[in-house]
Image 1: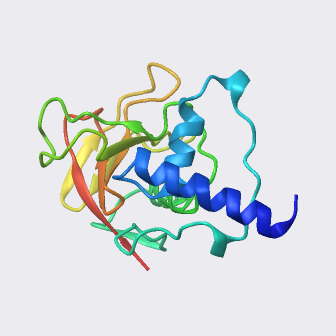
Image 2: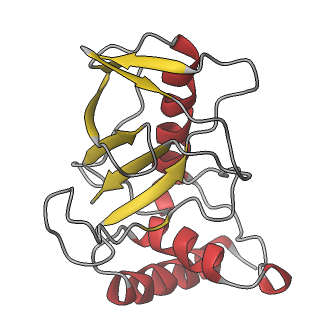
Image 3: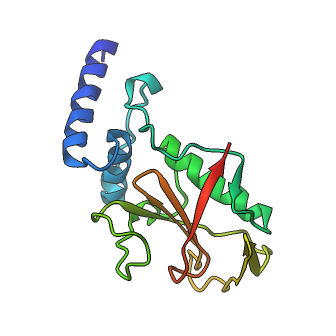
Length: 178
């Protein structure tokens, strides 16, 4: 396919995805749409130059080098920053449920329309500390009961970042430091 034809098709798909997923960028909508499809129907999208894909919104959480408040476990910080970078760059995420809608059923986060919040798995490697201090709060981390463990990262509208050390009982707002 010629480059101009490819860009025209990509532009049309971007417009359609923007209409179907108005709360998200077209690029993240494509990732959401692709992750919702049955595995047998997923086809790798052609890679276009970054300039041809809509850039993340100005409010998007930009990858960085550290988090605030401070964590006692630098391994968790590194893991959270890798997740933020993967989400920002449209990269691969390790768990099939990463990026699904977090419905905020208990209302522990500010009320927003359905689809505003997305959840991601924070699963430190075996041997990681069984407690973590974030700011001035210390949390005992439950051993993983299933494949994903209890820790989660929730991103709201691409601009709010929360860490839950205890499977949605507590939400700690985080800031990515560059």
